[in-house]
Length: 135
Image 1 (tube, rainbow, N blue to C red):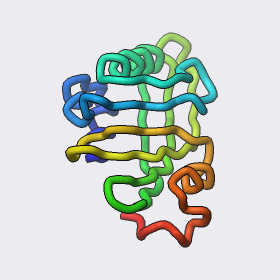
Image 2: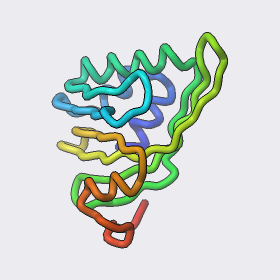
Image 3: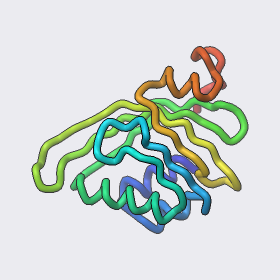
Image 4: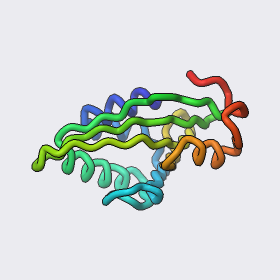
């Protein structure tokens, strides 16, 4: 599911992205360092913020550097984000982690963290050895 979401996101495909989201989706970017900080609930709000991100960045990509199984219906991804400003041409990048949960096979919640350690702690996995095998 996450790979399908990432691919749709990378194509800036609204319909493909929505197809991966639960109706009651919540995306928590409250730990973000930038203009898109906030908590977004429901597909309308989530697509609104994603569209704003896509409009700001002419080119943007997310690579999953690591995926950690956290038990039933939860994973952590360590992400490498790269983007180039649409009007400025300036490039930027960030390495962050997300804790994802799924309901009915769809993305139900995602919370952004500034580090893998913070995401592991939020998942109740105090150290990397507590996590399931990555895939």
